[in-house]
Image (cartoon, rainbow, N blue to C red; front, side):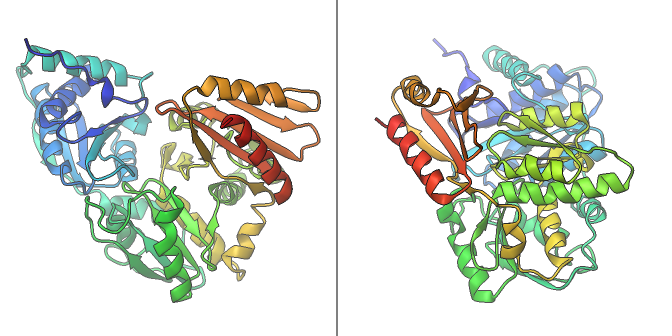
Length: 468
């Protein structure tokens, strides 16, 4: 008896991700391509299909295109693209699309990120679940019937248009010369950095780019393409100091996230980058006549973000962690910019989508428009002391949360239940958030305080309770 296909192992809340040859196969990808067209009603419409440098991506692109054209879509192959290139293409061409990537996951993984026309995200609440169910039906029936008029396949390169579009949003031509080390991690930033910041397509900028691991290699021979992990930043930190560079930039595998290193080799927190870019985007929006520009931030970002937004004449809107929540709020609030602690940065001028490259350009502009080193510039945006995100693997997450609540839910402390529990001292000296992972048996702690000793005291006590 044949086992029925169940794709729940690879269909996540926001995308598809699985182990190549096990939970994501050519057969599955072809069925997903057909289901994508059916569920979104794309017969007779253009569907954009690209992928990253992973070894399985080229075959998966062809398999998806086969399923999509069988159901009547006209597939436009974008070939090698970063994830934010897909969002650019979906926005500028007003077409739905997918890219094959597993972002920062190890080499044995691949996956699919999807967007509707206009770069509107697709999640389990906005079509992804239905696509999964339709693909499962195709797989279990064993046949993908072609429509009477199958679609055709054509090819388009969007790298040049994407690069020119970003250059039009942040003008770097007049900044002081900067030396920049970029660690692409053998991911897609190895293709997009020379195009946007270098001179491979457009005229050169006053940037001396020192490349680290620009060779596209989905086996990730140097280090995992996940700059959220501190050990993956060490090569970049050393290179910045060795070359006397002004800053360093690290991208993840699909280049939609960017981490920043100052001239001393120290990481600049994504909260500080959020605040820095927010100030620039507020000023630009106000200059264009917008009275009170809106900035979105998730509840894990530093308290400095909403404080600076308000001081700059903007309005800060707090949201849960997760890109679908931020993108939805970006649209409903007409927000000019949004930032997350995970180094995802969202821009209204980029179809409300996230792009690490545009955030990097704002940092380069802010640094290059004045004479201070980045360490001094960033200090203004990092007035508090943060623990960073600390994960605890637990057998009983709820019991750990209850222990913390029993101690901290008391007079003098405010408790907020948006996305886990956030405890804030009424005197404003400290706050922390405890949030259970949606996909793993982890409890995540983020703590912040006005001084280092208070942050360490709160952090250590909460971890003691969590890990008891």
